[in-house]
Image (cartoon, rainbow over all chains, first blue to last red; front, side, top):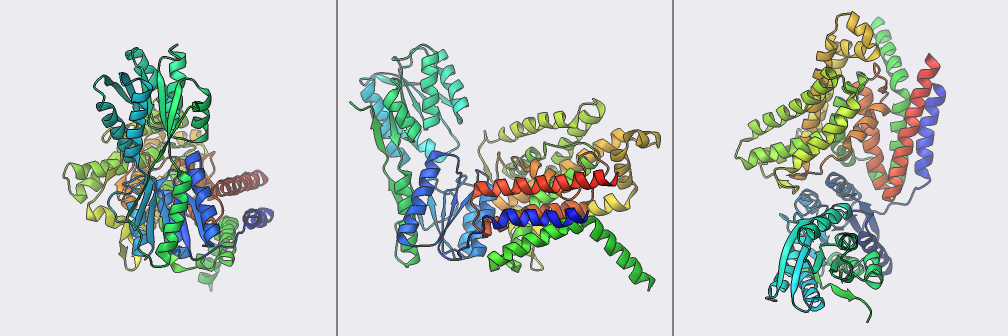
Amino acid sequence: MTFSRILKPLLASAALSLMTIAAQAEGIGASLLTQQHPFYNELAKAITEEAKAKDVPLEISIANQDLNKQLADVEDFIVKGIDVLIISPVDSKGAVAAIKRAEAAGIKVITVDVPVEGAEVTSYIGTDNYAGGVKAGELMAAELGNKGNVAIIDYPTVQSVVNRVKGFKEAIAKHPEMKIVAVQTGITRAEALSAAQNMLQANPDINGIFGFGDDAALAAAVAVKSAGLSGKVKVIGFDGMPEAIAAVDNDPDMVGVIQQFPDQMGKLAVDTAVKVMAGDEVPADQPIIPGVYTKKK
Amino acid sequence: MSNTNAANAAMMRAMKQYGGILLSLAMLCVIFSVVNPRFMSVANFLNVLQQVSVIAIAAFGMTWVILLGEIDLSIGSIIAVAGMVGAQCFVFGLGFAPAIALTLLTGAVLGLINGTLTAKLMLPSFIVTVATMGIYRGLVSLPTNGAPEMITDPNWTAIGTDNFLGVPIIIWIVAVLFLFNHILLSKTIFGRRAYLTGGNREAALYSGIKVDRLKITIFMISGIMAAISGILLSSRLFSAQTNAGVSYELDAIAAAVLGGTSLAGGVGTMVGTLIGALIIGVMNNGMNMLSVPYFYQLIVKGLVILVAVWLDVRSKRAKQ
């Protein structure tokens, strides 16, 4: 009993003191959605590097896709006394509480990647998803010679994806000989795989599939192969993380991917935060136009 | 004189029972305050209490269930369902009071289902609540097709944001529910029956305790506590999230077990569970204050729980 009474706190303190890092009080607090996605890894890396380059103190918290954790992280930032909050919201509606709390404490808020609904922020930095969707549609039309049947794997509860799909549909609609024959939801790679298989089963005459993200597109490319349609169906993705870029280089069915630039986003977010701290005006909306990555000719 | 002696005896007993875990909590607080002076402030203390409220209340319910030697893995899903039921009440134009009533009723019914399946069909509660965890999580997604629902009712959101006598309402709610559960468990026949049944089911049956009814009631308590957690969570977030409370059942179990509740049943107190929940809250908050990278936080949390449970098991073995 005595042993346990002494040992328990000792072990706990030993574990903690191992990673005792001097805590900074002022500067930027960044609350990111997750650390288990290459997009957010890139974003976090860019934020860290730019903060180092600009010599501003930076704290990063990872919400692990849990809105309650994101709120707690932001509350802890408030207690620590940060000046600017950079936040990639877990979802566009639910992050309002965290943002309002930060703003009530006099902290300026910059949203990155996902915009927030129901609260005014100092600046929003994110991919112009609509423009990216249009680019995906134009690429699809070019790949299919302006005619054919197209399917979409979407994620209808996320506004950024809704904008992508809207841009894609509008670009396709400009081509009278092209038709969207199926739209199904596939959020994870596993769900996207079954969605793609179902669509190919129901519409064997599909010529192209647009996946709202890399996972959806990579899953679609697998479905195309397992349906024995390799070479007959062109797949286009969105995000442009290393795995999808490699697939575009090596997988004959993966013809292209719309590339987001998390590195630019992270850098711009920190630069904006520095300007805000200096009292400068910053634009309320800072869209970043995505690029198109296709096979090397 | 005898009064002081009695008080001293009670103090000694409390120290004997909770000394180790209280010392852990104190040590954590000391370490965190040394590294970041802002940790030890009233503002941060209220901060931790608010952050831990959802887990603490769910853990009160979980303590009852574990005391019986059962487990309730569905409370994370019940937390989400409760928030969504509240949000949908407002969508359908109901007022604050009926929304609260319906939400609590939902928690009671979901608990009733868990309890009835466990007690009457003689299924292990682990399996029953793994199944209902999935079922309830599916149900919560139906009204909005997986999307979150905003809650704008000023009374509902006030729960999560407003103060009463300078202390956040949420903390008052935790305090009241703690007292309620503590008294029910330690001062009533109902509580004694729960201990007896968890400690020795056969003996409980022979002494005339209606074990099935007790079990069902306790799963309903767990469901209602989870529903209250769901109300607090959705009021803090101004919205009902279909993925709210994922894996919170594990934090609730950890809080109860850290507080000395035995997974074998028959042993445990609400005081212990409250301290266990505070340790989890202080660890989360303190490691944030120290800027410990997220993945290391997970590792440290897991290690602390492992060590605490090992010590618990070890000290019990020594007593036997």
